[in-house]
Length: 362
Image (cartoon, rainbow, N blue to C red; front, side, top):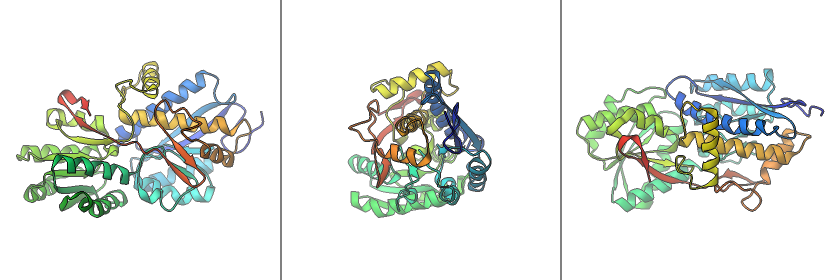
């Protein structure tokens, strides 16, 4: 079988990934990667896609945008991968965008729900998860229903955190809530004492955290020790299991929005498939939300590779992915929809909370 273009040989299809595998967001990157590799291993064990094995080449960026750009350039121009997959983080993906556009290479399933990567429409980017705007509205509806009206925001001081803060500012009044204040933290920092003191003075009913698991856990621990009895709500990218593990019993009641189903209860076929894959791989992390997202993302990408046919090209992969709809794709209970003008993928959002023993409830 003749090679079609970069990253495609008669034997394999090479995909490129830049994600944090070290540093304060490392567990998020590793969990997503393990879930994806679990699905690719299943595919390869069955003979691959049109006779080609799928190989994921992953580079560590430590959640540093400059390293992400350098990794992206290496993956495209030196390693010559066929497509990009599973990049993690808003500022990091934004940093990689110029290289992605220059190369005309598709990026499938970035681990971010940022509006900046969805509007204006980017035909090279395919999202599998719901957007942060959808998570925001879901979360605010829940707070409205629980009567928690005084909201404060703890946010990452970069493109991600600022965009989420602005979205919250625009949306809280729609649900009859009041934004009483906000405090930033630098990316990759967990120095929270000053922010915690300010939040204690604000006396919010709930602190919405638009940060990763390390600063989120640090703030919750600090404020609980100071006597704060209100709630904490987090976005899906926080890293649920990592947050729960750090908080121990201090985490009980902490809320987290999720963009995939419960990974430990096989209520849907996709969850059962994922659990079997993790059993076979002897995964370090076991089953978790971000791992399931990685598994689903890999499953969608492979479906696109199959539909693109044996004469594989990037343009053909884009067209193939755009043909996926709930009517013609069995997502195992996880619905996806793409088209030539919409690469949003999923609308699924749920809310979970940390229970006793670090278990999750919804």
